Image: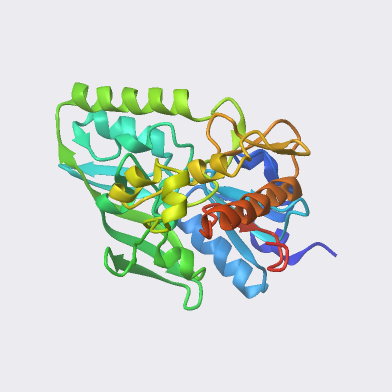
Length: 323
């Protein structure tokens, strides 16, 4: 007998490899896979999944994500809503809009505030979920409100910026998996188009020179700790910490390098020598290899600096004991 979901959700597919939809190129199959191109597609898909008591995972650009080698035993909904409505210095954008494309579109309109996202392969929804940031700018800086589906009530809700509870690489959406982002109302600043595009070019050059973009990865593996080191012995052994103390933030990559792990390999996964906060896929790497490197980095940094690194990547398809 045919699965009910195949009857109730036209377009749904079975056993689709998720590695083909992530920047890491890692991940087993989704039991069910559906592409939502419109707001209504998304609403129908989550309703069907709820009625059939299926686990749901919302997939955007596939960055900042590590999927189990076993895949996901439920429905993966890939968001491809690409609506962008710009009026004046405001824009309402769908969750599936690519960040880089949006940065250029805004630049063409003379709107500044998303240049930092150029070169980031993620989507607006994913950026809001993890309050993505770079070059001292956060996605939350541009947010007015966010529309989301509450999976408990199956109703759409509008959340103010304050209700989104943005913090360091975090939001209410990351804490409450029942809230699925549909779109966001954003505000930007007027500026000369050429100046904005010049800034985009600078940020792209920075990423090209400092990040291992020639390899598949999830982006930054750990959140940069926002704290100050007071241990005198550590300050003597690592004088660079004084400068980081002034900023109140310590690069996770620095801590990993000083723990002697740059270039460390397990299977086909490696801690990048170019930027140690990236764990890269050298080709056919497995999720289990990445996990082992993450655990090793956390252990070494904890031992050397008494700092607990917090993962920035999202884990899908793992049990809690595994991660």
